[in-house]
Length: 595
Ligand code: GLC
Image (cartoon, rainbow, N blue to C red; front, side, top):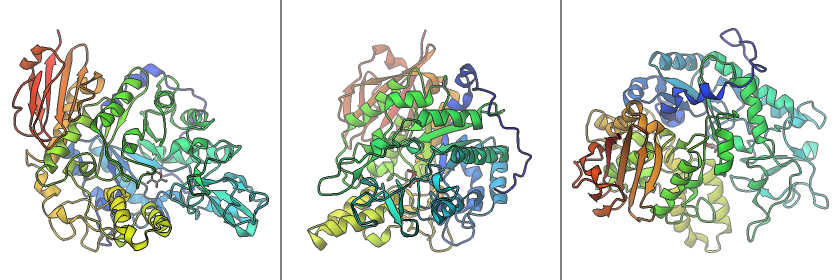
């Protein structure tokens, strides 16, 4: 590991957890996080790929938006099989993105502006090109053999043939979750692609190596970590078979590695070894597919302590059928109920994160809103209003603040994402309709592909959208001629300015952070309404998720008619509550003091 720029701090390992009261009072709960996916944010050198100097060039834009924290998706050295979520050196920057000096400058420039930096921590797996894996693969008796999950072929099967895998788990990126290594005659486990072997967290040396690396980054000045699939680090060590999917030999093995038996133990150990006793609060968020509310309470209870918050997936899985590329219609009551259940579930202990969007999800205005020219702006604002006024930490994913929409991708050659391409290849190969089935398959892929969230940020209407002077690695959305930052910043009616107002509201009004949550009209098919309440004040939020005007009698007292309108998606509301009349995709927020 390269030497740290600053002298290392003594290990805080044994200083014990920070008192719960200190954490509970922390103002990190008022922060808003902005996610930068560096490959698609801004390209400073014309090679078509975003980079750190591109991020450095837009810090004033982020400051103007008002966000407190930047979460940077991986910029470490990587063969880029999964765009950097396959790391071959945890303590260096990939030349594609810049240098360690650029990263140091980013930390410094963010801190100068009062903002913080959260790094992506990808430690469920490494790249197959990481030196740890190279050693582990080199022989059965290498000291690092046990740093990964190596197992013998299934008895009675020819090694390397389908069915000989140690379990019948499928990978999240299609195909089996095990790959055979001829030379040493064993299989290794990879929940994601074969280029992303899973680390064996049962081995204490692995954990210590990870903690040392995390301390190294904190000593360098970073302020926190977003932890990639951190609820997959503890596996059921008996590695049981799973129920195969119909017509397949393989099936999802997730229940054997999601929130596994030692997950909490590992995270508490990480807290003690890395975070406890530091001068400033280290912001932590665990990405956790499949996490349940009771588990999330345990992960985020400040009294334990493990993490500040988790990314749960319930609401972004609602429109998945048998799998993510099998989109099904989403009913608004289901979406409202999902978010409300987490508000209630984490009301007493724990903390929510709030997101509709990230680098793995299609654009929310296309998915949950309406990206037609008539409704894009209003629906993007209304989605933001609803999300940001829930209780928890809001995450803004780059371009969301501009109301960026899905791109009109139509051919498989438009896509780049490993998950999309592997799914397509497998599904196309299996599709008995042959060529005739392609349009439907492509339509599903175009709707749900991770590439939809990864199109370059639209800075201006120029041919490269102000993202690059070269050829962008992934096509810019042609709508950038009208949807772009240059057009939106400073325009009071824009999506960008609406996000700015929402972020300022969170900073200024304690009800947004602290208020409790009550969902109104849970079964209403078009209205999303709720109340946030502290002892001193309350907010009423009402939003219309329909392309037509909608009337609703909100179940609130008549005195709300005298409350102040503090935010709208456009013109002043037609009628005060309780009997609201909302225009298409309109939302409004009222506030009143409580006596
Ligand atoms: C997380 C990341 C995703 C990545 C996967 C494997 O879900 O967000 O982009 O492909 O983990 O690291």
